[in-house]
Image (cartoon, rainbow, N blue to C red):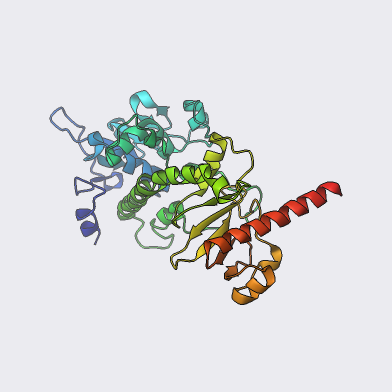
Length: 364
């Protein structure tokens, strides 16, 4: 099954994943001038998303696409490798050593590239991405290295998880056990398994992180980046939708707008934040969606009226005085109307009530 997975996989062009098993007792001979196969070194034993992703990144580059992955902690064997990640106790780009476990290591994207704002301490995957990222993306997307689109960065979650950085202060209200890091971890042998061999799991992990990274990269290139122009035009046209400038409209649903909207509001110096997004759904009806207060929060800048929440259809139309209502979610973040005019009126009524409430609170 594993052989078939790699035979047909586009993630590994050489179609053969060469893994050196340091525990086998048969160390390979040092590479001679007649041997062109390069070596990527990383640690053996339990593997994590960090070094697996770093190895995948490197194998997408022409010089490492056929590289042998040497999994060992033996300094002599690591010294034979062309590049070493997540082991060895050394960070030195000049000699291609990318470990982050040493006590003195505290590098972040910002410390190594001051023009970048990210301050999370980097893992080996982050270090490899920082030094090879532009070439990696150029290789995979066929875009030129100086193309602005190559500024799209992969999710920094891998760095935070591997360096033990919590997502929240204190105890989290719930845990997510299906993250990429978690799914890679599940491929390690269970504590009570008869075999503690990690090599087959490492191969599966390479395929897993590779498929997920390429899928996300394709999304960013083919969907997320083109959406920016759509969102930018909608921001510019918002006063034609409603004079307040607080309602934005798309002619088609499904556009990934949130990240672009927050960025464009800053770039275009939008003084009054946009509160609602209108767009048609797959049934030809219209949705009204609240703009969240931030990218990682369920709080809205303005939520739909509390008395509408959880009410549907004719009952909602009678309550609101707006024809053709379909629903308002119980959490107040989204609603629906059969017509564009009806959805817009839902936004206007909510904005009016919000303005009145704000004015009343200001007087008290």
